[in-house]
Length: 264
Image 1: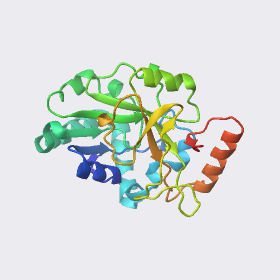
Image 2: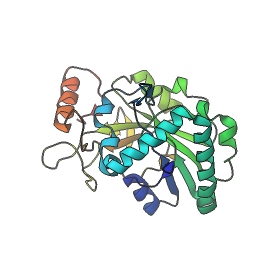
Image 3: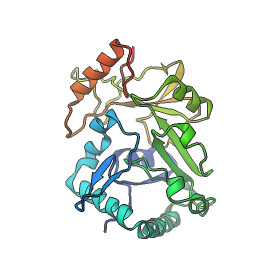
């Protein structure tokens, strides 16, 4: 069984080298998994169009060994959650020895279950005063994830299903909003590769935008901000990035929402 926690993610590397923190993450399969037994598990219940350009298809996440490791972890989560929790807790104790209060954990690097329900508040409480805390992005509406452990920080992920009510509920509730934006000016593709720093808009829906590609430590972000994330090119998938951008432009022209935003 591979380790549950990993630092092998581009933005973790960037975060750990530029911020005064140490970040590790748990990578499970996103969206729908169909096991050999025929059983089905959806760890991203609010996934939509984002599944077609999920970061599971980018960079190190797309490597065959990474794909295999995610499958093994997801199988353990589904078939033997008590053992999964035991191993996760054991690895976190080792992480605490090395990182202490500088250590932060992203439980949903690719997935989106409600860990406050799955693990429980007592499980999170054992890490208070030991680790810095836990953080994630989520597409769950804030009304369905408003009661959180005090050491668990969430950023809402904008999607084609999001409404202005969702926007105001999150901002007014102290939860920032991550928005994928097609801003790259290189090669006229609209998508950004690692190291590309095409400018993000200064505001989105009249809320200040911060550059979410600089690091992944969302718990350090000032509140009442939009976290701008440049659209990245997937290494694989059924739909190419040009088609995704074309759809987003069409949606914008027709007054429809999209998880990819085309800045004015």
